[in-house]
Image (cartoon, rainbow, N blue to C red; front, top):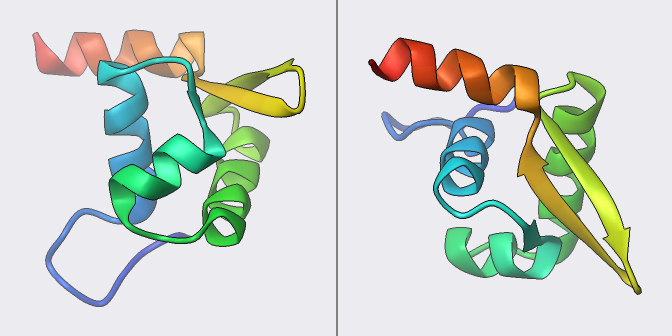
Length: 80
């Protein structure tokens, strides 16, 4: 599980929230928004991909991430 020691939402939830609002971000852009390094962000995204919570596509050397379509529908149903 990807969690932190404070009352803040864990990184996985933060990443999915950002991608829900701004789909199509790279590892670098996500790392900048969450003020962490690219290697750590890549690890989190790998876990989220394995869980099928995010998906990505390759654009040149960059991997562009999106909330997985099935997970995105769950977010919208919960939010309404």
